[in-house]
Length: 206
Image 1 (tube, rainbow, N blue to C red):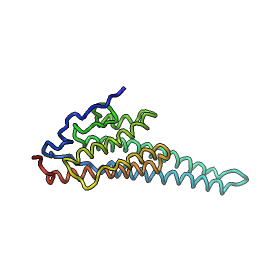
Image 2: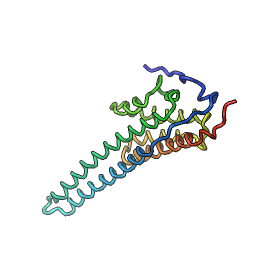
Image 3: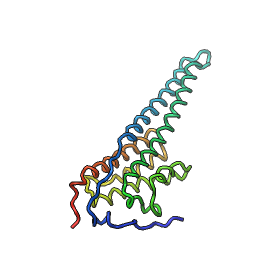
Image 4: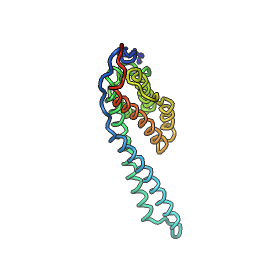
């Protein structure tokens, strides 16, 4: 049973230290994820359209086998793209969690520090991943809001969107869940980038 622990060090939250340099997050995971989500949706729509055309062009109640086969192939390709987008999503989580300073890689929803590798790989545990996505989504928001004391941003972390993205993943993973999660992660990435760019402008502690 996990026991919620306090932050490894209070300084980043209380703003007692001078802001230090932050890394830069690559846009490649985000762009790749969005492209794969779009391709997954198009592939599924293509498969359905081919099956519908097969039924419409049926001769003597026999579906058009060529179109039926083409639809099946389109679905197989779509499934491959779908799983590819899942793994790219895990890599995106890894990179964003890795961007967090070591002392910020924790959440009150889970005991102890969460490494970037654990943050990503725990999504692969069947059924547990439904719980884990809320831990990580909300954990990212909590970490960003703690860091805003030292690295001010114009907007707070989108925790409401984090929860909405998790709920949508439960009921309509594709395309609604994937799109909402991509929007959430894009906003988190934007806040991370804003912090990285404004480090030199952040006020020093007295």
